[in-house]
Amino acid sequence: MSLRHAALGLLVEMDGASGYDLLKMFEITMGNVWQATQSQLYGELNKLTAEGFIEVASEGPRGRKEYRVTDAGRAELRRWLLEVPPKIVRRDDVLLRMFFLGQVEPEEAAAFVRKQSAGAERALADLTALEGRIEWGDDNLSFYGRLAMEYGRRFLAMRADWYEWVVQELAERDAPKS
Amino acid sequence: MSLRHAALGLLVEMDGASGYDLLKMFEITMGNVWQATQSQLYGELNKLTAEGFIEVASEGPRGRKEYRVTDAGRAELRRWLLEVPPKIVRRDDVLLRMFFLGQVEPEEAAAFVRKQSAGAERALADLTALEGRIEWGDDNLSFYGRLAMEYGRRFLAMRADWYEWVVQELAERDAPKS
DNA sequence: AAGACCATGTAAAGCGTTACATGATTCT
DNA sequence: AGAATCATGTAACGCTTTACATGGTCTT
Image (tube, rainbow over all chains, first blue to last red):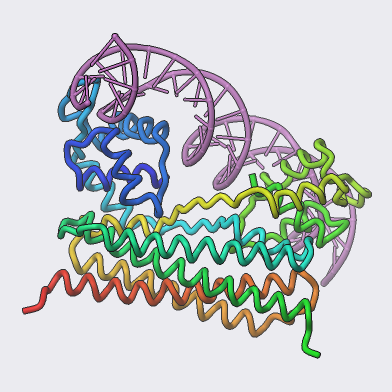
């Protein structure tokens, strides 16, 4: 149940934001860490309101609702942050496929891994390019966004390295030392 | 919809396995890559049977059903493996919390990150110890399991490094250069 | 005989995705 | 006036978790 806390946390930084605003900010700042669909976010905002963690501060044009975090909301955010043990759910579609590469021809397997490797390299290049274009402020969202971006770089680099190592391992298994 | 393919793939390697067998193997070999509950697995096996991707080869004591992958199942596994683009869903409970560390006191934030760091180091030590105890065969499950384990090591090491870097960044922000 | 383990299943509730629906406002 | 964008919501369906439920078999 972390979409709730992601929304709560974002709203603390963006006081007076609407669901629409939050949704955009979600994509920009936390898309790589937590994803949310429009549907889900609007639903969660209503639940948070019903439970008193946020409230509608004012209403704007086009039915826009501007939210504010209540004291109860801040307390809940803090509680979650420091007291709820993070739940690690590992589900990795690419890694899962790796397990079954023995089912296809060696060349197909190698091609698959090389493709993933190229994808990681490309994503890393994109991220590095993006990083250069962003003008970081010194607000919280910028500061922590930069940390997350560095994480992304390290993650992608690690993946790319590992993929290359896997390609070698596959080659060795396919053509064992003579 | 990858639990389906995880089950299908495992069953190819473990012909004649029951749901119970698969469940144990899931935990041992792929727990870090894809998780499944008992409930879910039994349900999926029934669906796979209904759709003709697997079949009950024989029945054992205690209602045990031993499954076998059909040709259609093998074809489906291959199709998924090579033709369905992997879907990358990033949801990381720890990383999400990082974004909101500005909400708590600097010491609390630093303590949080150090705790995660220690957790990663510990997990890395456990994994390395485990690796030494395992006797790897040369079957597919062993071979790919070893690759996955190496991934886990690199992942955890990367996380630990990054956490330490974050601690430093936090300290610098808290006490800027005099 | 008791306890451990084998073995499968159902039900409920929550989370997440996709698609559909509606309408207001702003810009060109 | 038409297009783009702002803005929120509902419905259906599937995935995931948790809890409950049941009973057979093997070991000591």
